[in-house]
Length: 226
Image (cartoon, rainbow, N blue to C red; front, side):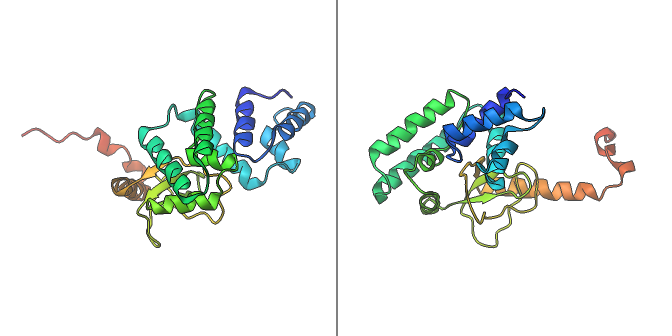
């Protein structure tokens, strides 16, 4: 079975995340050519022991987001620059390494692969995941994940016990991941976003209790003119 364009992107993301190396990717592609039709490259990597199940889900989530995201927002870029500056001030990496990560980030974007600067710094071994979390905490940012759609978000001013619905799928509560094999983050959530997400989740919950015979009637009803 030949590797599809979508799976080529999957392989690039897996390598960029540091989950597999180029040699392992080549072996997986070779194994896929001998596998039955329909066997996904990611499954083959798991079967060969190159990827864990959690890493597979991380790459799939990144792939899904990269296909829909066309650019990195200015706010996200500014956040990355702040993280890079803090990492240098803390002595976690040097200025040359940050500039190398920025160049790598730009190179990946030419392939429509959009990674945060922190993700690139981790994948290149310049920072650890724990160091990125610490630097985000100094900016009052916490990474929370959705157990349903596997999206991750930078949440501003989050505190223990705070319940925030997922803005993407409406899952009632984002969770603080126990492990963070990949630092891919889909967006940022501030106070206004929290209120919008909560209202959306409440509306969806209310809609579940509406009988099927009544659904859609509010769209057809027009109040009489006086």
